[in-house]
Image (cartoon, rainbow, N blue to C red; front, side, top):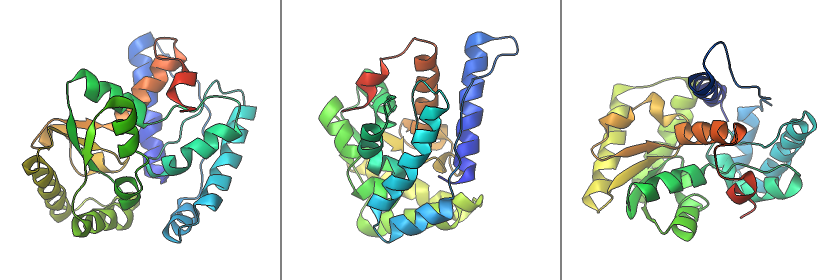
Length: 232
């Protein structure tokens, strides 16, 4: 939940709204910005209940502000998505669902997952793709997961994108391709800062962009009902 990812979401959602509506339209929205340092420390200590409490408090502010549905503008935060969804009356648009529908429509049966070590190891993203969309999910070996996590936390969330880190990401993607992944899921808000989707060795899908587009679809009445998106 770095401010860089919040800014990215804000831009993508408003660009999508402008494309759909034209004129001088942008998306009416509410954003509650959290302190990433606090959440990062809590996650590193495994204090996910406390992470959930912080996010639930923010979600209730969003709900009180009149939002029709809520989003978590970070992939890792979806580890507590079910707790957040259960604590508010408005629906939560889960980030894995737009990705799952897109992958399914493209005919992908096995994909590689790249993100923080929490996203790659805790199962909340990959297991949802497997359970709800029948898509097998591969992740890099442990040492590679550790290296990518360090790049995300120590570099990308601070706005630093190094050429050598880009090479690491490409190496991980090629490793997943060699194991049979027909596509790569870029499941981190900061990864597109390092490598564009067209630069991957296989088709790559930016879950942040898909999430933002799904939000505009839902807000304009053209997407799946929010109740279908989560509480499951």
